[in-house]
Length: 237
Image (cartoon, rainbow, N blue to C red; front, side, top):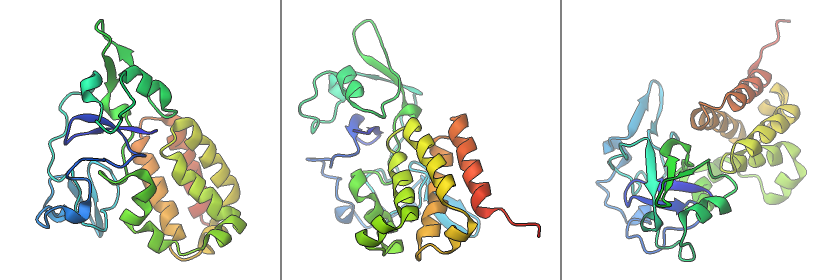
């Protein structure tokens, strides 16, 4: 369970679960006019494709999502009661229990009435809003960049390490720190150059996303710096 805040409905949701019952859940059914190109959250980049200012990731293939032009919660902290739990979290009745059940949940506090207080920036950020985590690769086109079959992946420790690192992005800081160490130990410049088509791009996107999402986490930023130096350092000789 990876908790995030839905700025559209003002609900706490679990991005491992589909947004059952929400009429904005399917990007393909959203109005064509809700294009990423016309969204206030689009962030252009010199010489590169733009990124989403909310997810800090490249734009989804659908070219739209449910958070088109949504206003971001102005407060740095959220005060949550059962009313802010997404309806499809049917078994949840206590917000604190929802956080306790999530291995990647941030620290929380409670006010005198028992409501949960959490910094909005501490909640997980999805790679694509409105799409469950299991479908992010397809929504971003990463599955097209990585045509390797499951059998090939299992036999290639480099690809296994990369996929483990991608999964660790949503599992919290401890898992990501360990994944970064493993990736740095397995991958070198030669390995990066010899990866199947599209995989070196995935590694670069992983580092950029990790650096942005965990920009305030010193050990993770240092781990990404170390990995980047190991992969892209040039020999003087």
